[in-house]
Image (cartoon, rainbow, N blue to C red):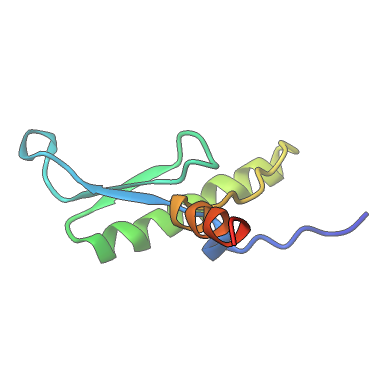
Length: 87
């Protein structure tokens, strides 16, 4: 069986500012890995924390024999592919 290499940078994410009532800062979510979220005071911190959360989530799935979700495409990647296919 071929071993699957986990590349964190292949997983698209969304990042958005949090409301002051929610503590401020930024929230990062990985749509391909349900429930994998993190936050940070600045976007860069949210991304770094998000990568840690993603790595932990994927390694836990692997440890328990759960299927590892394949990275999807970001909205930008989908839009670019659609544009290319129309040419």
